[in-house]
Picture 1: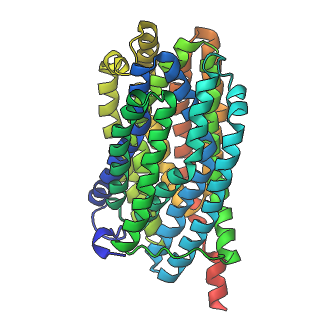
Picture 2 (picture 1 turned 90 degrees about the horizontal axis):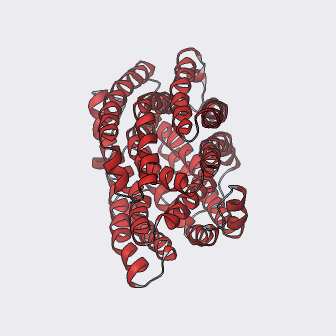
Picture 3 (picture 1 turned 90 degrees about the vertical axis):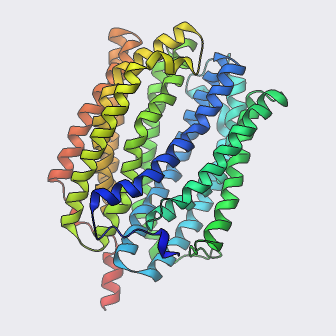
Length: 454
């Protein structure tokens, strides 16, 4: 791989490299989140609030069903970044092949199951009958392209694991540019309605996937090879780290899905308002998501090189950075809540609900940032079962129950109160485990080292 695009995190200024490595990931996340934002803008303005509600519900399901593979994909950062930090190039190639084989099979299987199960999943969510047909159509088309979504995200994850955060930005920029052009063309000009928005997304992601494969191999020298049956040891490592990571993502997205069932109980206006607010929510969360992902790569290299003092400094720098950035963004969203909501919908009731929700949760997001930063450090060590436990606590013992309880007490305004409070409490659990847990005693390559020593 071209060394000029790779970053060595085991030497030099931590804060400087953290910012340099994170900003392309942040920009990529902003662009990637624009998929649903662009769909929401066009669908909401051209097809109305009902269609926007369908996109919101379907998008939540897509994230939930896909989350298991995304979670296993996140194990790529842990394993490959430690391989890089330890200077194990042959091990890097073996692990990379194992990920391609295992995750490719899972992605195809999940896409097929998701396509046929779409109507039943939407029914379980309590989807209003008025939007069930269009929600099911949008969801099924997206499942057709699930391999493309997985593929180019996986390529980007591999590049970031070895310290290259700039190249994946090219793939995302291509996909977003195509989506911006194809969305209005398919929705309005070809008169395909909500199906057009889904087709535009799938075609855009497929193009980015093909470009990503060619560019990564030809220009960047990524050691991809024709997939072959991986060694059992590599598969066991992926399962040992990947399955808990996958279930961790299921716990997160399932918690989001559970909260959505609370929202649907308040009717279409609440669903549309919450959906539009969630798009803005995702923007507020981007710094935390970005830094959590970046820190897993940064800490992983240092853990592989056994530089534990730098790992502690990475955590400190990450917390300072995320708290500062989150406060600035939260302030902007708090002040401009109504204006931002009006970009998605024009219905006064929908705008009021969404703006009210945003103002309640806005200043709780710095606490969510603590979770992402500290969990990113812990995940880099391979302590994925512990991260799974923390996410179950955060979403299933705090966020969903608190959203439901406060909505029972205060009506729809209670949803935001419960969610915001869960951010605060879960950050205390994350900090407690980072401080007192034994995550730094884990060695994911212990068996391999013992076998080599014999």
